[in-house]
Length: 263
Ligand SMILES: C[S@@+](CC[C@H](N)C(=O)[O-])C[C@H]1O[C@@H](n2cnc3c(N)ncnc32)[C@H](O)[C@@H]1O
Image 1 (cartoon, helix red, strand yellow):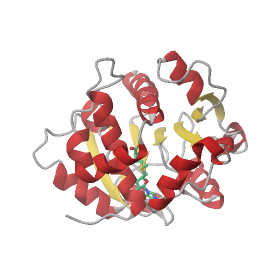
Image 2 (tube, rainbow, N blue to C red):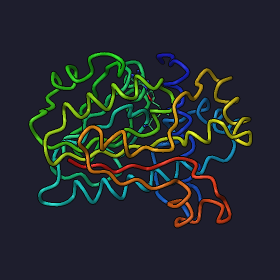
Image 3 (tube, helix red, strand yellow):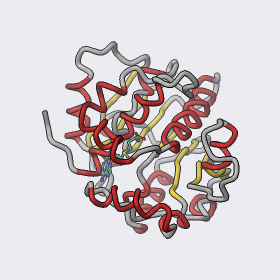
């Protein structure tokens, strides 16, 4: 089995949290492959982290939007999941007539293929693209068949907090350059205020100790997109989580933001 760097290992942690959610009687989704993708290492990381409701909230939020967007007659027919990790939407969601590109580090995608060797195949055309998101990933995507002149639906979930600000800006510049009119972009951010919150310190320290510290957060996510010519809506994790019954009703903390942009 290929070994993973600490940030890539967080993909096994989020898989473990999706497996945990799938066992709840009031689950927000079912991810039957999450347990095998998490493995013991993912479960250990999840146990050390404790309760992390944001993962189930964002999974369900993006599941609903992706299903709505790609299901319609004239929705984008290309879906690109950047930093896909152990995402199983290719298997779990109905994406008729959609090509789904999963971009992540080559060693992570190789491990995922090994772990899913005995699993049923995906429900759409899935193309794995091993690439470094700090490098020339648009070229790797194009070589895998992606066509920048067609509308695309992008998903960037659970990534930006691990990057430094210039890398976040470069990532959205590159996505914008590859987005034809009619494209959509879904992403999430940790709140900038959370990175400075003393109550969040134990969780932040635990992530740093695992070698995957959080660097980037923002309390004004919309400007990242309006400056690049996108129409944008954003909503806090608290707001969505309270509607789903997964966030304390008396909490004033946003937690982070879920963003839906279009151009
Ligand atoms: C927290 S995981 C999120 C995975 C998935 N989107 C989810 O929500 O479960 C972060 C992912 O970012 C990927 N990643 C981080 N930096 C990367 C880079 N420079 N190039 C490619 N992938 C990267 C890691 O390999 C990992 O799969």
